[in-house]
Image (cartoon, rainbow, N blue to C red; front, top):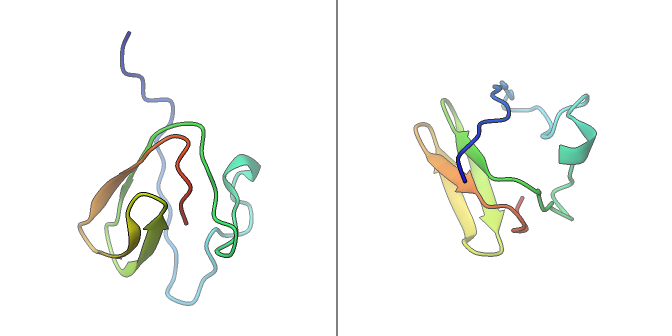
Length: 78
């Protein structure tokens, strides 16, 4: 058993931009109304700005610059 990093990436979302943006990979698309469930863990680091995150496990949380969090596989979130 081990730990594997399958991919790394970054994105810049402007204050008035939609998220996810057009061209976002199909398996990762979602709407705010429906949210999504991913089949792998993901680490998210907010390097600038702020927003709102919600998951079945955490409820609604404000996220700001410098925050990092782990998305758990199989957990609904938006």
